[in-house]
Image 1 (cartoon, rainbow, N blue to C red):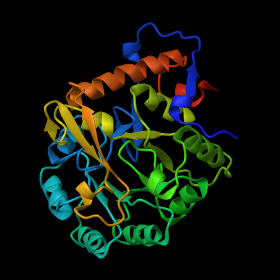
Image 2 (image 1 turned 45 degrees about the vertical axis):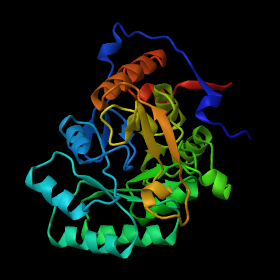
Image 3 (image 1 turned 120 degrees about the vertical axis):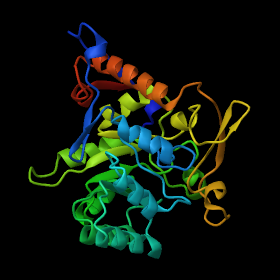
Image 4 (image 1 turned 30 degrees about the vertical axis):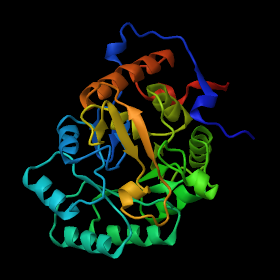
Length: 318
Protein backbone atom coordinates (compact mmCIF):
# COMPACT_ATOMS: atom_id res chain seq x y z
CA UNK A 1 0.00 0.00 0.00
CA UNK A 2 1.24 3.48 -0.83
CA UNK A 3 1.22 6.11 1.90
CA UNK A 4 0.27 9.50 0.56
CA UNK A 5 0.95 13.13 1.46
CA UNK A 6 -1.59 15.83 0.63
CA UNK A 7 0.42 16.70 -2.49
CA UNK A 8 -0.03 13.11 -3.74
CA UNK A 9 -3.82 13.52 -3.86
CA UNK A 10 -6.30 15.42 -6.04
CA UNK A 11 -9.99 15.90 -5.21
CA UNK A 12 -12.58 15.05 -7.89
CA UNK A 13 -15.35 17.62 -8.65
CA UNK A 14 -19.06 16.74 -8.40
CA UNK A 15 -22.29 18.30 -9.67
CA UNK A 16 -23.34 21.37 -7.65
CA UNK A 17 -26.69 23.11 -7.16
CA UNK A 18 -25.22 26.07 -5.25
CA UNK A 19 -26.09 29.50 -6.70
CA UNK A 20 -23.57 31.41 -4.60
CA UNK A 21 -20.54 30.09 -2.75
CA UNK A 22 -20.94 32.85 -0.17
CA UNK A 23 -23.92 31.03 1.40
CA UNK A 24 -21.96 27.82 2.02
CA UNK A 25 -21.55 26.97 5.70
CA UNK A 26 -17.97 26.31 6.91
CA UNK A 27 -18.83 26.14 10.62
CA UNK A 28 -18.06 23.18 12.85
CA UNK A 29 -18.79 22.01 16.40
CA UNK A 30 -15.96 21.60 18.88
CA UNK A 31 -17.10 20.41 22.28
CA UNK A 32 -20.37 22.15 23.01
CA UNK A 33 -19.69 25.20 20.83
CA UNK A 34 -19.91 26.06 17.14
CA UNK A 35 -17.03 27.89 15.46
CA UNK A 36 -16.70 29.61 12.09
CA UNK A 37 -14.04 27.31 10.67
CA UNK A 38 -12.48 23.87 11.26
CA UNK A 39 -9.00 25.45 11.18
CA UNK A 40 -6.78 25.92 14.26
CA UNK A 41 -3.56 27.96 14.32
CA UNK A 42 -0.85 25.74 15.78
CA UNK A 43 -0.26 26.18 19.50
CA UNK A 44 3.28 27.43 18.91
CA UNK A 45 5.10 30.47 20.26
CA UNK A 46 5.66 31.96 16.80
CA UNK A 47 2.03 31.38 15.73
CA UNK A 48 -0.30 32.42 18.57
CA UNK A 49 -0.08 34.86 21.47
CA UNK A 50 -2.46 36.23 24.10
CA UNK A 51 -3.67 39.12 21.95
CA UNK A 52 -4.48 36.88 18.97
CA UNK A 53 -6.05 34.26 21.22
CA UNK A 54 -8.43 36.86 22.63
CA UNK A 55 -9.21 38.23 19.16
CA UNK A 56 -10.01 34.76 17.83
CA UNK A 57 -12.19 33.93 20.81
CA UNK A 58 -14.21 37.14 20.46
CA UNK A 59 -14.62 36.51 16.72
CA UNK A 60 -15.76 32.89 17.09
CA UNK A 61 -12.61 31.17 15.82
CA UNK A 62 -11.09 28.28 17.75
CA UNK A 63 -7.63 28.75 19.24
CA UNK A 64 -5.24 26.85 21.50
CA UNK A 65 -2.84 29.01 23.48
CA UNK A 66 0.75 27.73 23.49
CA UNK A 67 2.50 26.66 26.72
CA UNK A 68 5.99 28.07 26.29
CA UNK A 69 7.26 30.72 28.68
CA UNK A 70 3.83 31.86 29.82
CA UNK A 71 1.98 31.78 33.14
CA UNK A 72 -0.97 29.51 32.34
CA UNK A 73 -2.63 30.16 35.68
CA UNK A 74 -2.50 33.92 35.12
CA UNK A 75 -3.83 33.48 31.58
CA UNK A 76 -6.81 31.49 32.88
CA UNK A 77 -7.46 33.86 35.79
CA UNK A 78 -7.46 36.88 33.45
CA UNK A 79 -9.73 35.09 30.98
CA UNK A 80 -12.19 34.26 33.75
CA UNK A 81 -12.21 37.83 35.02
CA UNK A 82 -12.90 39.23 31.55
CA UNK A 83 -15.39 36.46 30.67
CA UNK A 84 -13.45 35.44 27.57
CA UNK A 85 -15.91 33.41 25.45
CA UNK A 86 -13.47 30.52 25.07
CA UNK A 87 -10.60 29.58 27.39
CA UNK A 88 -8.20 27.15 25.74
CA UNK A 89 -4.71 26.36 27.04
CA UNK A 90 -1.87 23.88 26.48
CA UNK A 91 0.14 21.94 29.05
CA UNK A 92 2.82 19.27 29.11
CA UNK A 93 3.36 16.32 31.44
CA UNK A 94 5.91 17.73 33.88
CA UNK A 95 5.36 18.05 37.66
CA UNK A 96 4.48 21.74 37.31
CA UNK A 97 1.71 20.82 34.87
CA UNK A 98 0.15 18.51 37.45
CA UNK A 99 0.29 21.35 39.98
CA UNK A 100 -1.37 23.72 37.51
CA UNK A 101 -4.26 21.34 36.81
CA UNK A 102 -4.83 20.82 40.54
CA UNK A 103 -4.85 24.58 41.18
CA UNK A 104 -7.28 25.22 38.32
CA UNK A 105 -9.65 22.63 39.77
CA UNK A 106 -9.32 23.71 43.39
CA UNK A 107 -9.88 27.37 42.48
CA UNK A 108 -12.90 26.40 40.38
CA UNK A 109 -11.61 28.34 37.38
CA UNK A 110 -13.33 27.86 34.05
CA UNK A 111 -11.17 26.13 31.44
CA UNK A 112 -13.16 25.15 28.37
CA UNK A 113 -10.39 23.27 26.56
CA UNK A 114 -7.08 21.90 27.74
CA UNK A 115 -4.57 20.46 25.28
CA UNK A 116 -1.91 18.04 26.51
CA UNK A 117 0.74 18.67 23.89
CA UNK A 118 3.77 16.37 23.77
CA UNK A 119 5.84 14.97 20.91
CA UNK A 120 4.95 11.29 21.51
CA UNK A 121 1.41 11.16 22.79
CA UNK A 122 0.97 7.37 22.69
CA UNK A 123 2.69 7.00 26.04
CA UNK A 124 2.21 6.24 29.71
CA UNK A 125 3.16 9.82 30.56
CA UNK A 126 0.20 11.07 28.52
CA UNK A 127 -2.22 8.54 30.00
CA UNK A 128 -1.39 9.54 33.55
CA UNK A 129 -1.94 13.22 32.80
CA UNK A 130 -5.31 12.60 31.14
CA UNK A 131 -6.55 10.70 34.20
CA UNK A 132 -5.31 13.58 36.40
CA UNK A 133 -7.21 16.16 34.35
CA UNK A 134 -10.39 14.10 34.53
CA UNK A 135 -10.08 14.10 38.30
CA UNK A 136 -9.69 17.87 38.72
CA UNK A 137 -11.38 19.32 35.61
CA UNK A 138 -14.20 16.86 34.79
CA UNK A 139 -16.14 19.37 32.66
CA UNK A 140 -13.22 20.48 30.50
CA UNK A 141 -12.91 19.23 26.92
CA UNK A 142 -9.57 17.44 26.62
CA UNK A 143 -7.39 17.52 23.50
CA UNK A 144 -4.38 15.19 23.45
CA UNK A 145 -1.55 14.41 21.06
CA UNK A 146 0.35 13.84 19.01
CA UNK A 147 -0.12 10.31 17.69
CA UNK A 148 -0.05 8.76 14.21
CA UNK A 149 -1.93 5.45 14.51
CA UNK A 150 -5.38 4.16 15.33
CA UNK A 151 -3.91 2.41 18.39
CA UNK A 152 -2.66 5.78 19.60
CA UNK A 153 -6.04 7.42 19.06
CA UNK A 154 -7.82 4.54 20.80
CA UNK A 155 -5.45 4.69 23.78
CA UNK A 156 -5.90 8.44 24.28
CA UNK A 157 -9.68 8.11 23.96
CA UNK A 158 -9.74 5.35 26.59
CA UNK A 159 -7.68 7.59 28.88
CA UNK A 160 -10.21 10.43 28.57
CA UNK A 161 -9.36 12.50 25.49
CA UNK A 162 -12.32 14.02 23.65
CA UNK A 163 -10.23 15.25 20.70
CA UNK A 164 -6.99 13.71 19.43
CA UNK A 165 -4.23 15.54 17.58
CA UNK A 166 -2.80 13.35 14.81
CA UNK A 167 0.50 13.91 13.02
CA UNK A 168 4.12 12.94 13.65
CA UNK A 169 7.04 14.51 11.81
CA UNK A 170 5.14 16.19 8.95
CA UNK A 171 5.31 19.87 9.93
CA UNK A 172 7.57 22.24 7.98
CA UNK A 173 9.52 23.15 11.12
CA UNK A 174 9.68 19.56 12.45
CA UNK A 175 12.77 17.34 12.04
CA UNK A 176 11.44 14.22 13.80
CA UNK A 177 11.39 12.23 10.55
CA UNK A 178 15.04 13.13 9.90
CA UNK A 179 16.25 12.76 13.48
CA UNK A 180 14.44 9.50 14.30
CA UNK A 181 13.06 8.01 11.09
CA UNK A 182 9.53 7.98 12.53
CA UNK A 183 6.72 9.68 10.62
CA UNK A 184 3.55 9.00 8.64
CA UNK A 185 2.42 10.83 5.47
CA UNK A 186 -0.62 12.79 6.52
CA UNK A 187 -3.35 11.94 4.00
CA UNK A 188 -3.02 8.19 4.47
CA UNK A 189 -2.38 8.56 8.20
CA UNK A 190 -5.68 10.40 8.72
CA UNK A 191 -7.56 8.21 6.22
CA UNK A 192 -6.51 4.94 7.88
CA UNK A 193 -7.44 6.19 11.34
CA UNK A 194 -10.83 7.41 10.14
CA UNK A 195 -11.61 4.07 8.50
CA UNK A 196 -10.79 2.20 11.69
CA UNK A 197 -12.80 4.60 13.84
CA UNK A 198 -15.78 4.17 11.53
CA UNK A 199 -15.40 0.40 11.87
CA UNK A 200 -15.82 0.51 15.65
CA UNK A 201 -19.06 -0.70 17.27
CA UNK A 202 -21.85 1.88 17.27
CA UNK A 203 -21.57 2.44 21.04
CA UNK A 204 -17.82 3.15 20.94
CA UNK A 205 -16.57 6.62 21.77
CA UNK A 206 -15.35 8.41 18.64
CA UNK A 207 -13.10 11.40 19.31
CA UNK A 208 -12.78 14.36 16.99
CA UNK A 209 -9.56 14.17 14.97
CA UNK A 210 -7.24 17.14 14.40
CA UNK A 211 -4.92 16.72 11.42
CA UNK A 212 -1.73 18.45 12.57
CA UNK A 213 1.11 19.00 10.10
CA UNK A 214 1.80 19.00 6.40
CA UNK A 215 -0.55 21.88 5.51
CA UNK A 216 1.08 23.99 2.79
CA UNK A 217 -1.99 25.57 1.18
CA UNK A 218 -5.68 26.21 1.80
CA UNK A 219 -6.48 23.31 -0.50
CA UNK A 220 -4.65 20.99 1.90
CA UNK A 221 -7.22 21.93 4.55
CA UNK A 222 -9.95 20.53 2.31
CA UNK A 223 -7.85 17.44 1.57
CA UNK A 224 -7.35 16.79 5.29
CA UNK A 225 -11.11 16.85 5.85
CA UNK A 226 -11.66 14.56 2.85
CA UNK A 227 -9.11 12.17 4.40
CA UNK A 228 -11.22 12.05 7.56
CA UNK A 229 -10.14 14.90 9.83
CA UNK A 230 -12.73 16.91 11.74
CA UNK A 231 -10.35 19.80 12.38
CA UNK A 232 -7.09 20.95 10.83
CA UNK A 233 -4.09 22.57 12.56
CA UNK A 234 -1.67 24.73 10.60
CA UNK A 235 1.41 26.61 11.72
CA UNK A 236 3.39 28.16 8.90
CA UNK A 237 0.49 29.80 7.06
CA UNK A 238 -0.43 31.69 10.24
CA UNK A 239 3.16 32.47 11.26
CA UNK A 240 3.46 34.17 7.83
CA UNK A 241 0.69 36.65 8.70
CA UNK A 242 1.72 40.26 9.21
CA UNK A 243 0.40 40.35 12.80
CA UNK A 244 1.67 36.95 13.92
CA UNK A 245 4.10 36.83 16.88
CA UNK A 246 6.86 35.42 14.62
CA UNK A 247 9.80 37.80 14.31
CA UNK A 248 9.76 39.79 11.07
CA UNK A 249 13.13 40.41 9.39
CA UNK A 250 12.68 42.63 6.34
CA UNK A 251 9.45 40.93 5.28
CA UNK A 252 10.59 37.43 6.26
CA UNK A 253 8.95 35.64 9.20
CA UNK A 254 11.04 33.43 11.48
CA UNK A 255 9.11 30.18 11.99
CA UNK A 256 10.46 27.55 14.39
CA UNK A 257 9.27 24.22 15.75
CA UNK A 258 8.24 23.69 19.35
CA UNK A 259 11.04 21.10 19.74
CA UNK A 260 13.67 23.44 18.30
CA UNK A 261 16.55 24.90 20.32
CA UNK A 262 15.10 28.37 19.62
CA UNK A 263 11.92 27.41 21.47
CA UNK A 264 13.42 25.15 24.13
CA UNK A 265 16.32 27.43 25.01
CA UNK A 266 18.74 24.48 25.06
CA UNK A 267 20.11 21.84 22.69
CA UNK A 268 18.87 18.60 24.25
CA UNK A 269 16.60 16.29 22.22
CA UNK A 270 16.07 18.75 19.39
CA UNK A 271 13.48 17.75 16.80
CA UNK A 272 12.68 21.13 15.28
CA UNK A 273 14.32 23.79 13.17
CA UNK A 274 14.06 27.41 12.08
CA UNK A 275 12.42 28.07 8.72
CA UNK A 276 12.34 31.50 7.11
CA UNK A 277 9.05 32.28 5.38
CA UNK A 278 8.10 35.26 3.26
CA UNK A 279 5.30 37.29 4.86
CA UNK A 280 1.99 36.57 3.12
CA UNK A 281 0.89 40.23 3.44
CA UNK A 282 -2.29 39.16 5.24
CA UNK A 283 -3.43 39.80 8.78
CA UNK A 284 -4.88 36.92 10.80
CA UNK A 285 -8.35 38.24 9.95
CA UNK A 286 -7.45 38.39 6.26
CA UNK A 287 -6.01 34.88 6.25
CA UNK A 288 -9.07 33.44 7.99
CA UNK A 289 -11.29 35.23 5.46
CA UNK A 290 -9.25 33.74 2.62
CA UNK A 291 -9.48 30.23 4.12
CA UNK A 292 -13.23 30.64 4.53
CA UNK A 293 -13.70 31.59 0.87
CA UNK A 294 -11.43 28.81 -0.41
CA UNK A 295 -13.17 26.25 1.79
CA UNK A 296 -16.56 27.45 0.53
CA UNK A 297 -15.30 26.92 -3.01
CA UNK A 298 -13.99 23.46 -2.11
CA UNK A 299 -17.37 22.49 -0.68
CA UNK A 300 -19.10 23.68 -3.85
CA UNK A 301 -16.75 21.52 -5.96
CA UNK A 302 -17.67 18.60 -3.67
CA UNK A 303 -21.33 19.19 -4.54
CA UNK A 304 -22.55 20.25 -1.11
CA UNK A 305 -23.42 23.25 1.03
CA UNK A 306 -21.48 22.50 4.24
CA UNK A 307 -18.43 20.63 5.48
CA UNK A 308 -20.20 17.26 5.40
CA UNK A 309 -19.85 17.26 1.59
CA UNK A 310 -16.09 16.88 1.98
CA UNK A 311 -16.54 13.79 4.13
CA UNK A 312 -17.78 11.85 1.10
CA UNK A 313 -15.79 13.57 -1.66
CA UNK A 314 -13.88 11.43 -4.15
CA UNK A 315 -10.11 11.62 -4.51
CA UNK A 316 -7.43 10.15 -6.71
CA UNK A 317 -3.72 9.54 -6.38
CA UNK A 318 -1.64 11.77 -8.66
